[in-house]
Length: 298
Image (cartoon, rainbow, N blue to C red; front, side, top):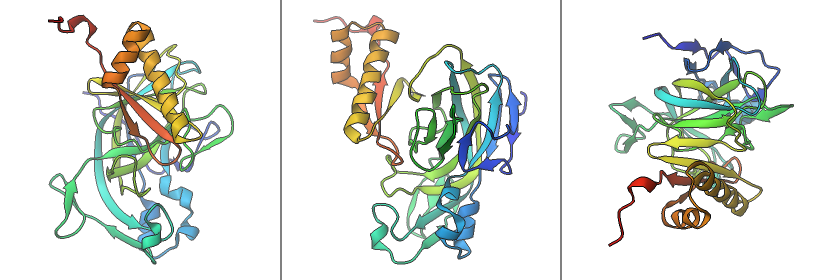
C-alpha cells in the first residue's frame, strides 16, 4: 500500500484564501495526512492571554492541498480514514461561550488520552471520539474565516458526525479546490454546547476524491447508511428550512421518490440535528430509503 502524502503543521493559516500557495498537489483519489496545530493552547497554558494570541489562531488549519482537475461545478469528497490524537486540552475561558460567565480566570488543562478514553480528571473519563472541527475550500474571492461564520464551501462546521468513516462533499469554488483542515477534537458534544470541545492536536488521514459535475450548494455528509444535508441560514429556522429543502430534493431527484412519497418518508424517518455554533446550521439526516425491499402490506 502506498504511504499517505503528508502536509506538516508548518503549512497553517487562519483563513481560507485562493492566494495561499498550495502545500501539496495531488491527483483525485490520493490519501493525505494533515498534521494539525495546538500552538494556541500551548501558549495559553504558558500564561499568554487570548488577546495576545489572537482568537483566530485557536482555529488554525493546515494546507491548502490542490486537487488536480477540480473546477467550480464539481464537488470535492473528503473521507476520514483515521484521526490520531497526540495531545488534548480542556479549556474554560471567562466571557466565552454559553458558560463563560461562570468562571473568572482562564482554566486550561492538558488531559491525558489513554486506552481509548479522555481522562478529564482522576475520576472522570469519557470515550475518545476524535473528529475534525474545521474543513473548507478556498472561496472564489477574498478570504473566509476559520472561526466564524461557516460557509457553503466549509469552515468551522464543528459537526460531531465528521469522524472516521464519514465523508463530506464540498462545492468547489476555484480551480484546484484548495482544501485545508484543522481544529481536531478528542471529544465534543453535538452542537458544541459550550462553544469549546476537548481540543486536540494530531494527524488526520483522509482520502480526497473528486465528483465531476456534482453541483452542490451546501456541504453534504455521507454517513453509515444515511446522507446528512447541511442547511445554513440567518437564523435557526432558516437553516432548518434549508436542510429540509435539500433532503426533499435528495429524495425526489436522487432516489426517485414521488413528491408525496418523499414528503411522507421525510415525516417518518428524517432527523434534524444541530450543527456547530459558528453559524445557524442544521443537519437533515436522511436514512437510505430501501424502496425495492419495502415490506408488503398485510
